Image (cartoon, rainbow, N blue to C red; front, side):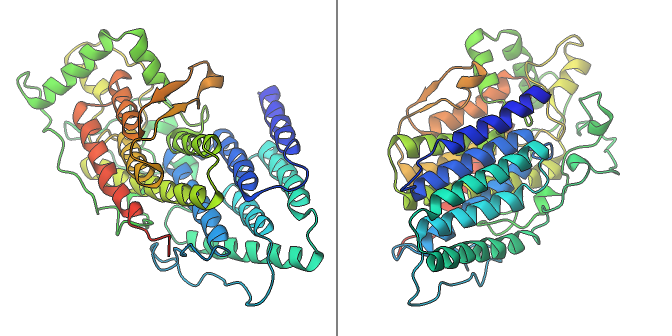
Amino acid sequence: MRLNYFSFVVCLFLCCGTAQAAGVSQEDVLATWYKLILNLVRHTATYSPPVASRAFAYVGVTGYEATASGDPHLVSLSGQLNALKHLPKRELGKTYDEVIVLNAAMEAAAKDFFSNTGPSGQNALVATAKSMKTKAAGGVVPDVQARSEAFGHALEKQIFRWSLSDGGAKITNLGFPLKYALSKEPGHWVPTNQQTLQHVPLLPNWGKNRSFAMPTGAACTLPPPPTFSEDRNSEFFKQAQEVHDVKNGIGEDERTVARFWSDDPGLSTTPPGHWIEITLAIAARDKLPVAKTTDALVRLGVGVADAFIGCWHDKYKYDYIRPVTFIKAHIDPKWDTVLITPPFPEYPSGHSTQSGAAATVLSAALGDGLAFDDASHEKDNLGIRHFKNFWSAANEAGISRLYGGIHFRAAIDRGLEQGKCIGAYAVKLRTAK
């Protein structure tokens, strides 16, 4: 473990240290800080997928507002996102450096939204901040540098203050409640992991958090899942049998799909981070200008964060049983899953809801028929997957949970529908004058 953390810090420092020494661009700043943040998500214990999605949303708002504040063609999201008001303005007639403004804002966001990262992460934050500040300030006169840094910091601080009242700012006990009463009724969630910590479900109140673009967590609520039943002719039993049969007949291609989209916390950038990586790769490939990239990233961050709020609202509304629990009790006691079953209720599928939101947002922001290669897990020896558009990726992410044995069909199909509904709110945000 020491070697992994040491390598993590050294890699981050060296990667940042080899960026352009002069003429660093806004695009460089954005890519550098997001690269660091993605690594921090991977190496910070509290960043479960919902928590990570929240951080990505606020970082996305910060990057976008820093860019929009100096771009006459962009519109602030103040007054559009729930409870976001009174962002600081630039002084009229004063000169600002756009690279320094963005770098100062992103540095402050990384430090604020990852203040609980460990010593290695803190060292990486310090190293990146020092390196990027030197590069961003190159050739800029001192008064412009100071003014630009001050504005970037002030902008981020107002966004950070906004974040503190959303209900998700403080995570204790890794998100597992110290007290929680489990339902004793048939068909409800029961623990699937032997770890004592996971004998209660993760973040049961997350669906009550203040949303970003959608009105509330209930804005895209779903109809109930199939009624629990032990009758072999019931819809519920048929869906359970499908999970059993699919897993038992799974081939290597399906196993690869399951692992590729698993995105487990602590081992990856998490599911929302996976979509951030896809977006950043497309931005680099297509040399997108910073205005377009920050627009895509803020819509993606907002859409996916809202997706986890909406999904969690319904997960705890229905408190649905996981496939492994029912299958072991009523179909095959020796059966097991391909993937580890996450510690929270089944319906709907979080992967499906957030992927449906991501596909909706990115199709609108970057193009409905945009093909891309996803190399997010190339370093994990899972290869590169090619997709003809964002929805083909979202659909594969959804079905991966059936291949993994951890979701029923209804949770996947309806989760994608829920994500599409939620993502539409982020698409409606006005960013261009």
